[in-house]
Length: 378
Image 1 (cartoon, one colour):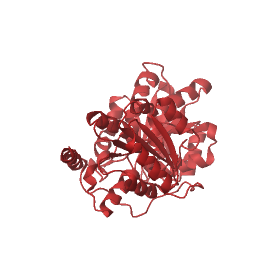
Image 2 (cartoon, one colour):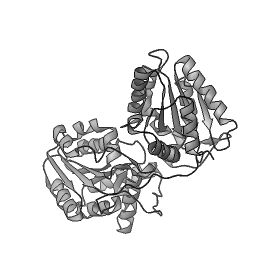
Image 3 (tube, rainbow, N blue to C red):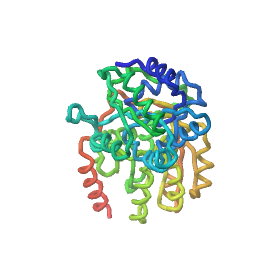
Image 4 (cartoon, rainbow, N blue to C red):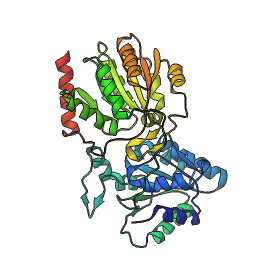
């Protein structure tokens, strides 16, 4: 394995000193080292991957030095527009090094087992970079002469003034964790979800955001004897659960729909709240623990922004904040009874059970179950 601090020192010697991106579980050790050793003005945890590319572009324009953008391969979709219409040699020709965590990686043409949402993206990561005309190297714990390969890649980046990429395999970097941030909140996300479930009327349609939120909701439903197929548990498409909920609310105006969101997902596509706020049967509950908790605990801007003011400005009919079970109960019951859209920020601390499970049915099977449950409730 490669020590993250050693690799970061190597990048520094090669002139890569600005970092931006969206944290990834495969790059957890690298991201932790960047957060530990790079000052905040040169390491930005961006709202989304496209924003990170644009941040690196601005840094290059201001200094003449290329930056590094870290992301999971699932985030390539968010990055495609600025890569093709801003960075590409046929447009401005702006160099950047991308470090891409390769979920669903292939070894000798055989795909390693991964979660369903990573299978397609893992298979097409290389072809996608080829289509974008982005030169890349695959970096793994057993890669021979990794520094020489990276040096050659960086030389091409600079000589041709173009984006390049390192596609990083699982377990490339030696294990390391972000230090747990102190929190003034007592409830974990799972505690919050239990309180939410207790407060929600049975007929409210539930959409859970991607990551551990939906996994915890799945186990809570099982423990309480309710079929999890009645909820839509989003396994990919980070930041888009709210728009899924919006579409459901528009399709079923006679029913309340709640999106149980996270602060990282909310920030990633915050503009979607302007759509949600205009839908009267929509409840948007954001569990804010100030972290990308599902991929290593790297901080978000969740506790640095005024979510309630943002929600009011977007036009939600009611806006509430909660941080304990009684406040959650009151806020959710009021939102469910309201004739207008509602936004609820629920503050929590980070952390999850080590033995947290995953849904047993495939996403396609879960979709069928969910749609059938809607038919049963009509």
